[in-house]
Image 1 (cartoon, one colour):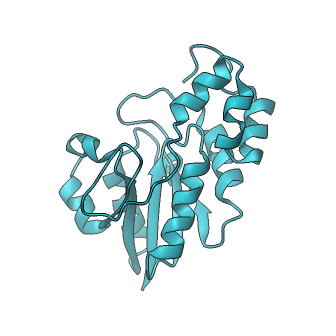
Image 2 (image 1 turned 45 degrees about the vertical axis):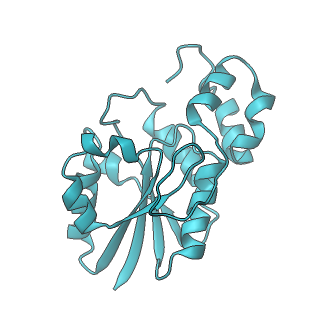
Length: 189
């Protein structure tokens, strides 16, 4: 059996805390053989996002250098609105020998009641819950990742405040954002 951690998100853009979370899971959670980074295709809560291909490319730049990490286009391939349960069901059907785990942050635990079939998600891929500053979960040891927000990164870039967020994203991702002119408008997703 291969144990695969699934780390999904908007990654709009991926930032240093995402990278740290990935390395943390691979370094501290026993028996994780591989970690899939899964950028969502269409956000289920109607959140505006940069184009999928840009977010996928930024994820490859942010995570591609980490051993045992694969950036997966599965949600683009499935099409339509991204739902964790649908992605996990598809992964389980395609890879019946995999044992799945879902990586989530305490910042999204409050959204769980809005998720489809969370009890099935827990059964298919028991969550690995990572603590984030400002969000606590008494069931998990406190590991404080930098309080970096993709929303704040996008807003700073839209205001032209590049230096204030330059160290919040991997350097290759920052270069991609600049070269692709992402997030430059005030109405940026």
